[in-house]
Length: 231
Image 1 (cartoon, helix red, strand yellow):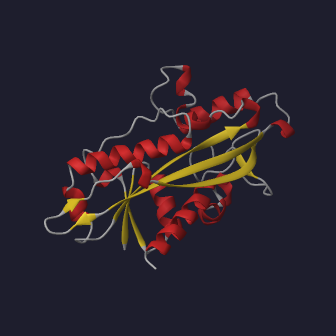
Image 2 (cartoon, one colour):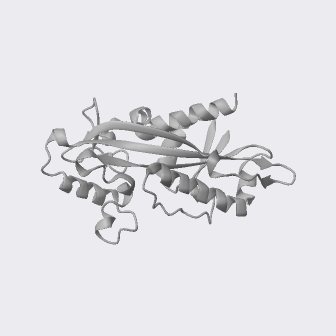
Image 3 (tube, helix red, strand yellow):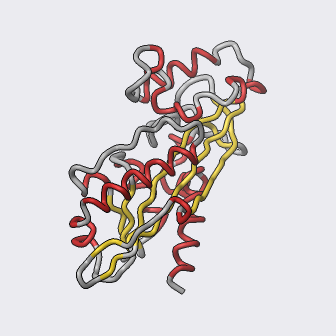
């Protein structure tokens, strides 16, 4: 299996990506690499944040390569993947956008992420008086991929640069419901209704979501790219 290190400690994301990629790939997370830093996500775009996360982790691995050597066979490529994703609501001029995970926390310190429930409550409050035609929104995901090549004897990582990063995007259009429904998924899933469906993302079930979600669409592009790498 081809190993991919996902620059996240979010178990939901790792599980979702792993299911979409399939058994050809082995998804690792920052939990498998103790000491790996979390990048500061202060870019203005999803692509900027995803790129920062990949480069930050790659630079750390260049100084601490032993975990990579243990994770892959000598001479095999090792991939780092980072995603940044969020909800864009038209009536809020694209907010929460890159601040989706810390939307409610901005009312306090503006630093740490907020609980999903708090983010959902804030979103519903801001859209409280908006009729259905003004509740359009979309989920957007950008994945950044960087390949690290390892020379086997002695094992060492080859130099890399930002120009080697490949980006993949996925978008799904929908709207924000008047109230949360469903107990599946995470984040804004209980509020987001995909265009052409009556159920929220939290009600669709993981299998259906893995076919239709923004992250699924980006990951499928990633999978196609990686499969071509080994043809």
